[in-house]
Length: 340
Image (cartoon, rainbow, N blue to C red; front, side, top):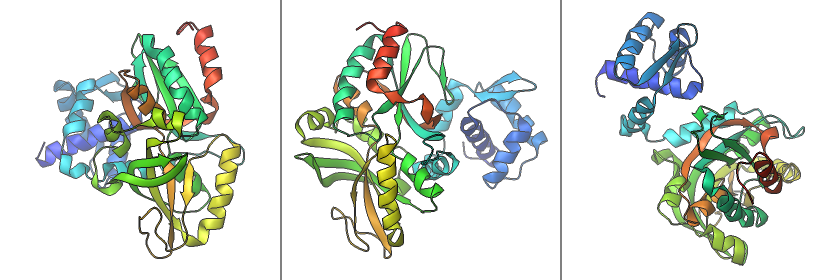
């Protein structure tokens, strides 16, 4: 898609994807305006008809509006790759802003990563995730399970499949932002753990220069050693690097303590003002933070040879839905999603 009309079509597809529910032309026009495009609802309707004919959108009803089709999602994934440089960085900022988790009350929405697997593989997936949660190699030891026919975010789970949702590390951004602490997500990468302690980054991808989630790419490439790390204290896991104002360090440490009390964690190392952290320099007036990867439990599933469809930064989800692994296993057994 290269013409002006094609660019508007791509923006309409983006607006439908972000909505996570059917929306009409007027809502789409509002979303396009927030993207810097001034397009009248009448014009949006014209393009929607074209997208319907191309099989990229589906009209649910006149009142409810449209949704993306699978073909539309595929087109959006491949359209204008140069325009998507920095897409992940923008999505990190958007979801961090939109979540409403209240740390003091322990309630509200957090950001979820999801992995979709075949129902028959669920027992093996539970076994793979257990050591990761126990070794605190995840953002939280809690997860959420949805089965075929149910929905999480805009994703409808196919029959005979189950969706595993874990807490995304970008949840930290939203919590810090709610405490009026600006945070910059700089890199996603692979972190070497030695004797249970973070040692060094062995791979880094800058969020502002990528169209895909770095850790998702590393997992697909088979570059993690998450299970080995969980069992022995030595291995390669997903992690990220963030910066916060030096003046906020005391508050960050206090927030980290509160997060741990709420079943959240993830800050592996907090640097000193204006000093490199794990050989990564920081800007003046800032300090670095190394944050554990929210996809590490999914990495263990992949390492176990289970086919898993990964979706990082998938959606916002209510934290009350997330439960410790033993409770989820018991629930899955009671609902006969699998048998132990």
